[in-house]
Length: 253
Image: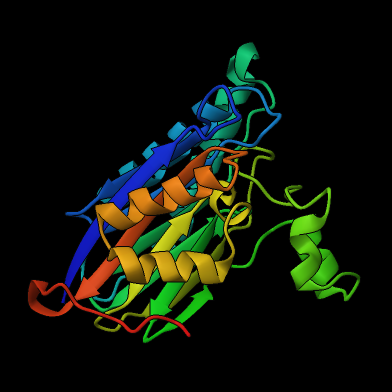
């Protein structure tokens, strides 16, 4: 199987600067996306540093048979957390900075996923569009406790309050998962600037209509901006196709 990568980022229509960061390494099979937390100092520094440390750590990882990509990704995220935390302690202008992160690392037919915060990863497979990550937010905890309905989450005033973040504390508990990839799969990493503006069905139909590459990434950004663009917007796409073929998947109904 061959993997095709694409990414795009935009400041949106309201924020004065872009605190999101995205890094794609096609040779390594890695996509990392981070969202510097709104209201924190130097969020753009935190997101960029997080992506760089995750990337550098996995580049140095011994890619030998039998190694656990999930464990390696967890270690990379832990190192990124330490780097952001120590940088904030060392530079007064960076005090209090933090970021979310979601990373997807392809190893053969397996996809290692790690995330902290509310940046997400979705999978489009045979017409089924579904999240593979679960937000670390107060609103998600309230959904899990039955205090609010999932369909009402976007209307809450506290939907963006995260319960975990990179750089907040000396250690971080990242969620790590391994998934088996199938030909035709498309994986979407995104910051909450996208999911706050577009519903999951809207995102899925855009992916089907615009393909799985750079055109789709730009179309998602454009649609979120057209819906208001209240936050920075960042996406990364990974598409799996046999022998480099374009691959196709039916649209969700």
